[in-house]
Image 1: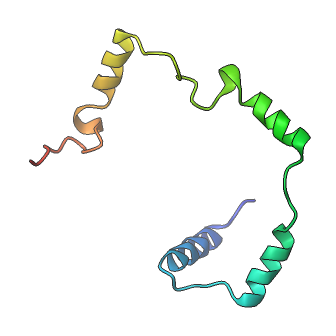
Image 2 (image 1 turned 90 degrees about the vertical axis):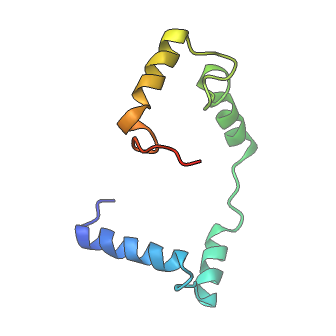
Image 3 (image 1 turned 120 degrees about the vertical axis):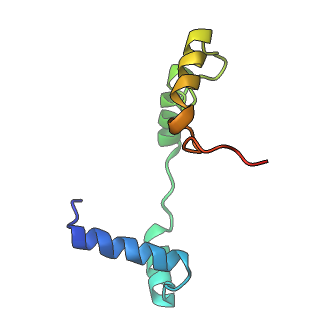
Amino acid sequence: MVRTPEQREARRIWKERRARGEYKWSAEAREKKSEAMSGKHPSDATIAKISKSLSGENRPRGMLGKTHSDATIAKMSEAHSGENSSMGGKPTQM
């Protein structure tokens, strides 16, 4: 779905208000949502397909049981140091 800038801004504001607890679902809206979602569970065949697709080399954490080479570790260290670090190059405070 393509949203206009105005729609994106309205959605952002709505999410912020909801996160702060300013907006609550009405009882009627909660009931409608509950009815719409009730009884919707994947079949055993669907679960088996998902399990098969995420097993072996396709597992989400593909590095499980593998290690990076020393050269790769050095490259990652260089890439995440200085201005590119999570601290933005600021010194740590102790």
